[in-house]
Image (tube, rainbow, N blue to C red):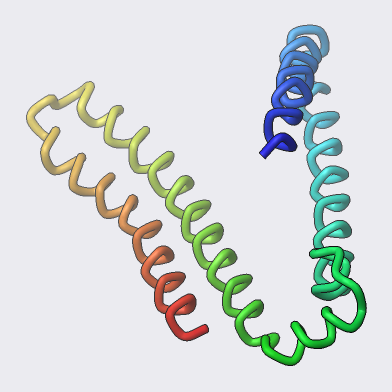
Amino acid sequence: MNLWFGAIPVFLIAATGAVLLVKRWRKSAFKVLAALNVAVMGGALALLAGALSAGPAAATGQVPALAAAAADTTTGAGGSALIAAAIAVAGSSIGAAFAVAYTGSAALAAMSERPEIFGRAMVVVGLAEGIAIYGLIIAIILIGKA
């Protein structure tokens, strides 16, 4: 829990730096920020791959004899199902975000010309939000199978 509180100042410094970068360099700042995001994502994936390949003993700090006993009682299928559930939720949430962004902006543009289509426009935006619910349902099914 203390790790999360320690991350708050890092997040604030990074956000302040990004805002100052965008204010100063305008167009080229987005290329720099995109490159930084790719670098951070690569580091996070490398860290995740290292944590997944290290096994349960490295994650829990157990002695090898206890780690071997713990490995006998668990299977890799449960961990794979949890990762698959996380991918399902993340993918559907990102897809829903894009869908709501496009349909929401189109709905606002249409409502500015004809305010009476508010109800129909919100139904379309609501259908786009349903994509995230489908991913959550798949994740619940996967976790139930693990």
